[in-house]
View 1: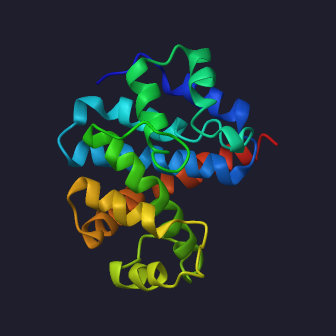
View 2 (view 1 turned 90 degrees about the vertical axis):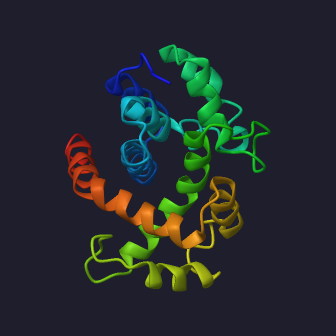
Length: 198
């Protein structure tokens, strides 16, 4: 799977419909995580496709929360998104707000990693370092088991995401921590540049 969409186009579309820094941060983080996974799992030539799907997966969430994954195709049409990209983006809401099942390994990863990056991000903020760089799976598992912590991050989605991939929960956590380490600095720097434009 390849995409003809340039990252700048994708970013402009995301920023057109998302003004909250948190949503922008989440999009950039999931983009970085998906790029890492593409390379890690042998889909290096599809890295841009995986990354853009990650960047735009919540494009409709801030402005149209009640129509999440239903409004996305209309917004994605503004930049001429391919059918495969629209399918991938909408499938991350499977069983929650969409009936499009994740089929390709990339779609299953987007489904699983989306929710987990939120949990890891919240756990990182609680650390003295405010970073994933020194986070271990054992401490993340404690946060995962504490249902009151980051209650908005669905544990059911994370565990079923791991199951759909045929991975253990620990493997999904370990890999996603590594994926977030790979892009943390770049994401933070990019967020700073957007902050200076306000």
